[in-house]
Length: 392
Image 1 (cartoon, rainbow, N blue to C red):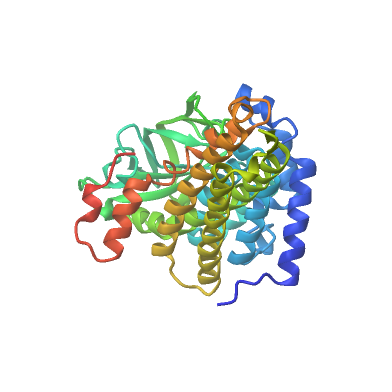
Image 2 (cartoon, rainbow, N blue to C red):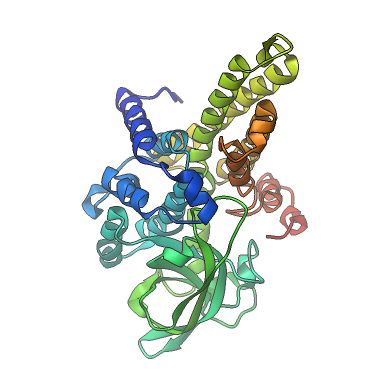
């Protein structure tokens, strides 16, 4: 394995960073305060090609291979200070577009991937329910046969991008078998279908520029042509995409870790107390050293997954480790930055406290880390380990 970036990847990284720093997040602080989705920045991302990085050119994307996609996403996370915007992009890619790319029919790909890549459609993943989060098999949303199609009934909650989404990938129960894996099916549902109700938006601690909400389906008619895969294949459709979500979604967090590290180094070298810069105190310098250790370990794990997916290999174990390690490392790094900046880190002016608020969601979304540790233990051969996981 050689994770040394190619000339093209290094050039892409520089290009993405320059774009993100110059064009994105200009009003990040105000948008965060107002919980406002930055549509103009979304448009800029679309024009730059961000929303189609992993999508083949024939469907309107850039056609990046998995490792190159990870490099680009890491650069986006480094250059863009609006972590909520980056999170919205990732939900669009890994909660919607990847489902269509891996499991869509040719007609579905032609119909949806091009406008998703162009940003004229915003994608979301309608999975979680009030009583079903990490426990996917306990969901109660149903898709009942109705002539040549289905009628969708149920409520989905904690849906990132939900209030602004045009296209949802929805998992619903198409059979009566309780907790049976072959009783779930995946559908492509558009927000303009009858009975789709964006019920309410959910205010949250961080990532406020990614709107989150409750979406209800009140007898929504869904054509059979909108099935992703065959009826009853929803669970394997879901599990085949989670390694993409649990690793690629966290690539920008590695970039954010590097940005926070550099900000902390600058503070350590410029802030003076007791007649010298604070970086000369081990209480400041050692936590910064730990930031670098976490960064490089996270990057190595992330690039390994990109290489494995480029080679067509399964990476569920590695993706699960990446989800746990990167999300928790970012929280530790952001907390360390608040401490290095002292009172300034606690104030809203410099944006350091926003980095921490945004980071705190990472161990929760895409499956809580308690559940991920159970999954990891089972992958390692510990029987029944998942049953002792935590809630979502």
